[in-house]
Image (cartoon, rainbow, N blue to C red; front, side, top):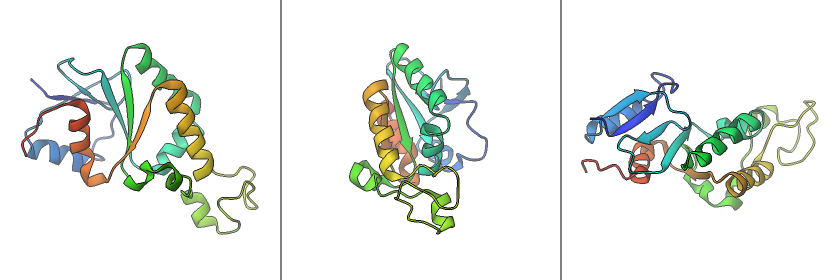
Length: 171
């Protein structure tokens, strides 16, 4: 029997580092469609599901442009009795929300026509989502929808998933 379920909508080949870690530590992973999140425990002894995000740029897209869809997923998990953890595989230091407020979108870093932390953009009609606003949105999602954002280094993601779900692994 598998130890973890991985959502079938996870893109094949993009999670090799996690899959290699799981295999090396004796974790059997079964791919199946999950209603929310990317990883869940198979035995039903946990009410936690984990949605992994590659980086802050993906988070910004999810909580900005795709906000309504993202919040619906958070609410579906909560209504089913699950706690959704959004595990961001970049910048573990952003667990400090003051540092999170300093994040600058890749769009703004490439543009260089205005101050990325200002509210107006001289190059685009709409300003890309940046740290201060992103921090407020994340705080609000946690408060209103029960999700929790965690940050870790990409090398530690698989271990953090197992720790959060309470899955034993070979040390």
